[in-house]
Image 1: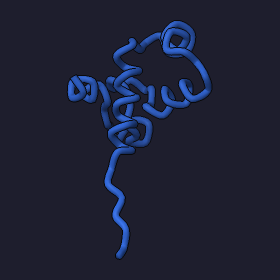
Image 2: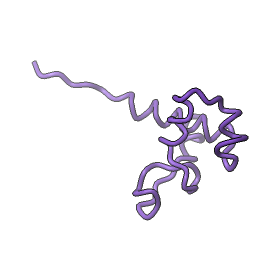
Image 3: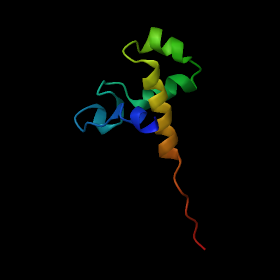
Length: 77
C-alpha cells in the first residue's frame, strides 16, 4: 500500500521547481504538510483549500514525508 500511495507523488523539473507534487498537479507536498501543521483537518483541506485532492493524496504526502525523514544518521567515531 505504501508504494501505491507514493506513486501519487510526482516530480517534474518544469513544475514547481522540481519539488515533489501530488499527481502532477501544482500542489506541492509541502503545501499539504503545512496546512496540516497549521491545524487544518484533512476534511477542511479537501473541501475548502485544495478540492482537487482526495484523502489518499493527503495520506501520500504524509507517507512521503515519513520516508524522507526516516534515514540513517551516521556518527564519526
